[in-house]
Length: 588
Image (tube, rainbow, N blue to C red; front, side, top):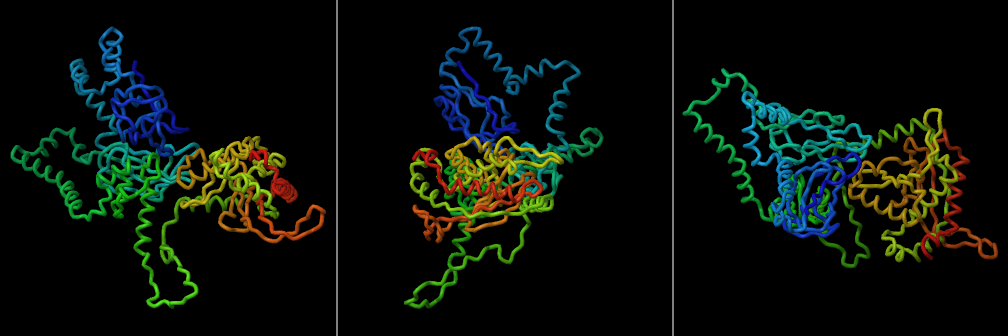
């Protein structure tokens, strides 16, 4: 008996995905939960496992094709389907049903044409013309849904120009929102006839971005006028000549491409077959990006799913090439033989003395921070904390913790756990002002500010108050990795009720972070430094010792939180951390 594997739900607001790579071929056997194929959406890349064990009988959606959620992807049987077919009536029923499902198959076309009533012979052609999105005008490319609560996006860059050819699912443009940056692929193959929204312009979800057509729309427009059609139709003598010219025009790009491939140096064959195949699935945009920069894809290590090469991987390779080119820096011709120390080399940024367009994410961050400062009465309170006991606990437990929990034991889980406990005791810091009403949240959703190459992003640990130390460590590690890899989806960035920013990771002692509206508080953690401090010994006498010290600083909205509330919140955290009673959480 055969079973059909369908496209699963791939996340909230995701309605379809693109099959990027089949991991199994027709005739291969597959086990339960063994990966069948890789699917990509504008939010996530993932593998689809097999729900049953059996043999691949038929692949219904090819690579680079789209499939909606719930669509049939592949048929898996026990290998005896061909022997049983036609042995009884049920097999005939199944073949009939299969024929109905494959209505687009060529075998069904003649019967459909034969059954068309007289006088309606032209209607199917008209319907087919209408379904293409307006034949003469071409297919409209619209702004897709980019995540929950996202109503619009900004066109940051067009990857194609008017008149250029585009393939199905080939990226047309790049779109940015305050949550994600993504590429919009073309739904059809054809020529880019018109760009409706220019770069740096906003477009709402559903708005028309571009028109993609066959490229002969202008010639098709007057087709309804029989007199014009007769006038424009070439004579019998002209037809062979025109067909010959069209053939030459069609062959020209291929000849030019072949000529360029032959003349290009071998190391720069970035989109050669060997390079692409050895590196797994490569999108057309990545191929073009590598080809323009002379990067050989076979030498690029992919960090995507299954080793897939992403734009970031090619950009790193480009940067590495530039660094290697600029490496032979001007060195002294005659260095002193007995020099005690070589002078430090200053790595001058390539941006020095240049200009660039402000990225969308910088505009959004700036706008939100200014709005937050103008809409709140903000101030900052700080305390100093002795983390020596935490440091000793961490040193004892981090190796066993990593092996047991599969997560690194950094200082942040300790700090976050103490903060979550303090929020439960002092809910003023975990609240929102809504007009004349104060809403005290029933859960602690902690935003975790992360510094990335694209800019500041704040993924959210949902229900942090229900997690133990290991759970917090895993969430911190997973979200941090997704942020650095630019794999965060809109749902990862929503719903924070309180934020923690670890500015100490960059070496800062303390800071005055801005509260992100509509939250009323943000906790900053400074760097940990060893320095002399006054402590009490077992007899209660004061003594000086080397301790691991850090600052905690809390910025808050004075409309909701008073200085006393902030001080009590920080004092609770200080006592909890200095006591260092986390042995049970660490299994010590």
